[in-house]
Image (cartoon, rainbow over all chains, first blue to last red; front, side, top):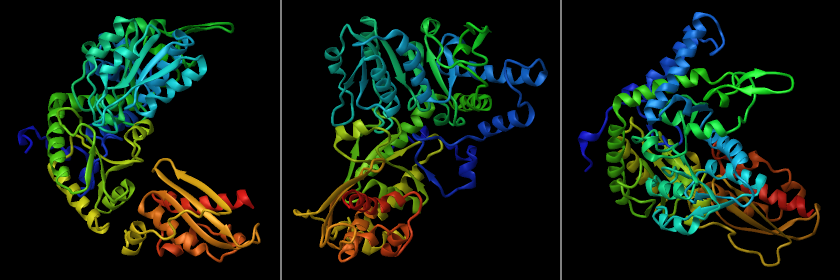
Length: 408
Length: 125
């Protein structure tokens, strides 16, 4: 069995689980539950200092600005960025990737330039590039995966060309949990002058991450998958790139001076943050980062590794169950995709819901991957710091009940 | 959940009218992209147009228990019914056929076969 010592016991920190003690929540890859500290930080802002930032010449606004910019500094430390000028607050991973496509993509890429993506990617790292390709005439190429959902990185040399300007791909597959090894890929990209964007929506909340070690040019993630509020996300980008990039949204806060015939832009990172930002959400994200940093991301990974190992073993014992993905806890995060012979994933999910077990069923915003694996949908369980082996035992009992109802 | 009664599971495992009608007057396909449910319906009319009566109905496709059982029940119920009557069928008709209501999370699964049939009929009428 998994090393029991690696397992955390944190359910008590999550009010939703305290209020719903019989709930088994196995959909953290979709959104994570919020620790009490996050809810309290948001409430504290709205209750005691809900002023705007960067503007007011009074104490409340000063406090709000300090908290908002303090959250940015927490993000910087958490992902080991060199400067807080490299941390842009957005509404989420999707907005971060779109921002790169609209700003860097439109200003730096030309017709027939090439972008390499992967078949594992979420629609949010495919569609923004398709829109860009339609707009400026650049080309998209895809790195394939094997039958275990592992990227065929040996294909990279064939895909790279002097026209390659960007490789954009997910760090961890949201549908299968595959952890992609990106160091060599980044070196190869940089050797030919291409940039690298990492969709880290599924890795930042689950493992230690260091943007300087990854040496990526752009990295995007969402606050809500890390236990923060919805509506807040981060774009990390190297400062030299952000300096060259034009703003995408115009408005308050992103300007230095506005005249009727021209305007000039604010310093980084505010050049990319037009309008009143998601202040409470950023402060909540800061509290989430404090919570996870206190646990330690190595311990978070060890906990989820132990749960994944336990779950993979238990799931494999069920007849007719097929796991999609590496099926190896060392190669995947706490995400397991599977099908059950004779039962559609949506029926699995509906029946587990009757047992108060929340899982995801569908294509997981990865339709190209589902086509590649030749399946219409999978059932997916995904873990967070608040899950336990008892949750997985309940899942297995639930799945046995599904099989009994469907007589398979 | 009431929907997963033995009769529904049986219709999912051994559906009624899951076949192709070679001389169909109307064929139409529909899909719930988010779920991966796909259905293709075949209708044979005794008389053409909105005055017509459905002589035979069948379907092909893949999907969850609710969509497949619903397609089975609907194609069975359609036989001998006038086209203009079928066009009036709605969610309530489906709940009557199923013998239970379907909640918001799964209503699209239950609606897919009827919507596909009605689109096929209005397209052809």
